Image (cartoon, rainbow, N blue to C red; front, top):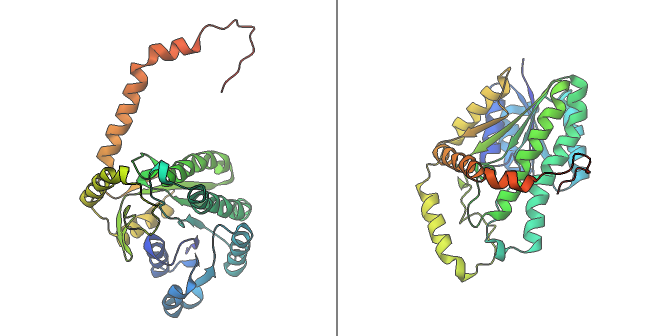
Length: 287
């Protein structure tokens, strides 16, 4: 049985590859993008199986209208792919308030609006699968990416809560955490050439050079392969809550999580000291 997809950020990058993979196997796709002109060739090739939707996910009303239109057009929604997003780069000291607000408006709030718009339809159906594109940057933090990390870490928590809230309605949630992929617009994300750079403070030039060297050593994945992997996830009866896409970050993540556990263990005596010994009759409080 073919599936109906709703995909944001579908004009390029991984989102475009997801759309193409779904269409090529006979699924139907509501392809949402800020620029739908790039979807013309897909409409020419697949006809009514693809519904282009001009959408800026920061516009809450437009998100709800687009999801509604997709449901009315295809009759149901099976797979919701929250893919729209970008990486704001810059040291914390370099970021402006607008940088932070814009990053969260797109990466976090845009995803929330899509989820809220789709949930009533999925709940009514008693089925559906929400795919959230996060990043390896949602699991670890590196210098010069604070704003991007904030948005992705927030999405990780949001969707972990969501998965528990909607499981009883037959709705599945998977957070996809890609590394770098060689998309048509270049390696994605390319931390030093993505068009979203804060005004540089020269005191961080050394960090920028080291980050560029690290990024250059990371293997770029094949987006077409990522799209095929996503098909396996949406077809699975028991999909993962989280899954890494690509190689290169897994060994780093193993070390990061081992270090966190060790630090917590090393400081357990202080943790117990911080707990103290309250009178059992005392009012419990936390910060």
